[in-house]
Image (tube, rainbow, N blue to C red; front, top):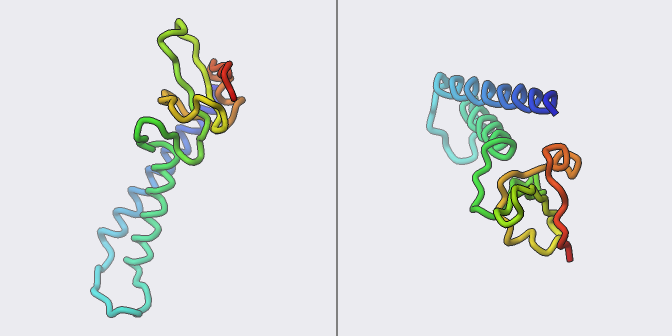
Length: 125
């Protein structure tokens, strides 16, 4: 589990470095006004690369939910209901209480949720 965390930290650092590098390149690129239909400039390509890198970073690490959603790449919801004395429970998207569950953690796999000490919800249908 620690190795997985370290890998995630390394990956996040790489994404952040890429975003910073692209931001700096874009700042130094010549921003010219183009006629409609003209070929993309270096600055246009940098803007696109930067947007893609920011989206990757957002969906992987900084997804801000509306309170009920997990990021698209981590659909398993985990929460710790106060009524269950600290039990940590995970919910899959097709389970009954998935929709109303407010996640405290989001996971890619059941194995990841279990590795973090979460158990499956007892109510599924």
